[in-house]
Length: 284
Image (cartoon, rainbow, N blue to C red; front, side):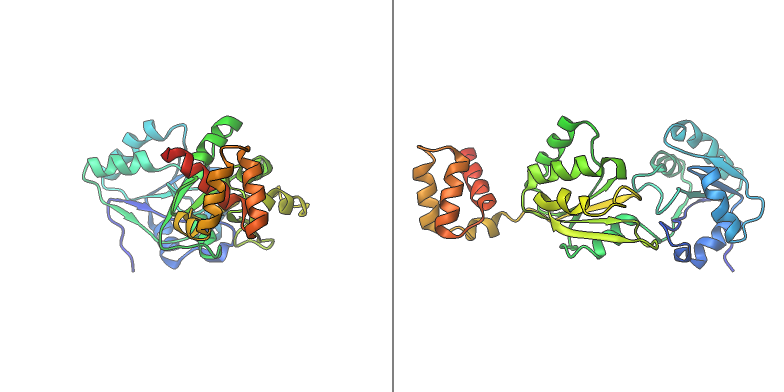
């Protein structure tokens, strides 16, 4: 049987399907002297369902994390075990916990992370995107300009990108992805591990259109998985004759017109040609 130490235990909780909680997570939550929860009212039904009786709960969220860190480390130093949980998934993955873990590390307190559910990794595994290298970007900015600026800064990111998004903002984000990334591949996962789990496999410029087909799309949290930039593949796909023609026409016609004409002549993708044209202008 597991005997807890005076330490901090990072305990993942299910992201939808309650059967996904691990035996070890249940054991730690039953034995911990104190449980820090992002929303105590939200977490209480889960704790009761796995047999945690009369848990000593401390509310621990974004707005009080810094001030509560010292209190919680003091509780551990007094000889107690503390478990940290979030509303769903693994704490600190776009959830509170960073300041508490940093405080524990600074004071020499042991931190034991348990493996478990994480929406970002669950979505990545079913995305069909490269998973050897990826970048978790969390939630995107709310304001339109900041959103577009952030996405543009990732145009040449060579790793698969993962974002979280709220259902009420998914259409604005989908339109922004289309405007910035064009026909780049994207997957959106909704209600992961739940009864109505849904995935949308498409390209950024068709994402909003695909989402609009689903009347339930604005129900449930979203994970967006975006394909990485492939500069070499795009450049190699453009014949040298097409590149020469682009160079000639770009001095006479607007970029969009140039790309449209060359795409028709050589049966190429306009976005690839436009990327090439942008790269050429940067090097001049």
